[in-house]
Image (cartoon, rainbow, N blue to C red; front, side, top):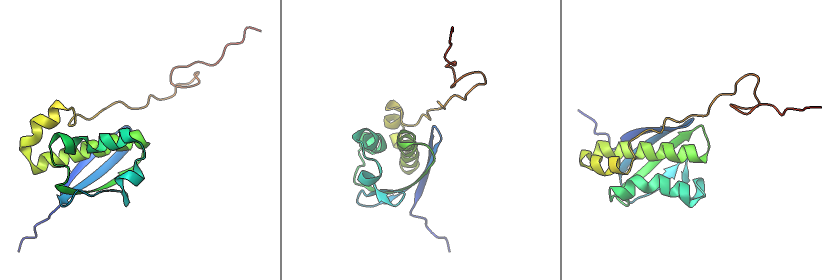
Length: 132
C-alpha cells in the first residue's frame, strides 16, 4: 500500500543561509522555525521577499508553508526561503515556470562574502598608514 505524501519540498540557499521549505494545501499560514512570518521577519522588505513567489503565481492563500532556516542573517535567510518556496511551487505546478523565471525567483544568488587576505584589515582594505 502506497503512502501519499501531502508535502512538497523545496531547498533554497542564499549567502550562508539554507532553507528547507515544505508546502501543503491549506489556508495560507507561513511558519518559519516555529514562528509566524510577522514574528520571525520584522521588516517589510524581508517579508515581501519571502512572499514574492506566492504573489507572482497568484497562490497567496492556497498553501500552508513550513520552513526550517539555518545560518546567515535576516537578508540571507529571506532570500533562501524565497528560493525554496519558488522551487516548491514549481514542483507543484510546472506551468508557473515562466512567471517565476520572469521575476527572477528561480535563480540562485551565488554572491558570497569575500575572504579576508593576509596583510589586510578586511577583504580588500589595508591597514592605516602612518607617515610619522
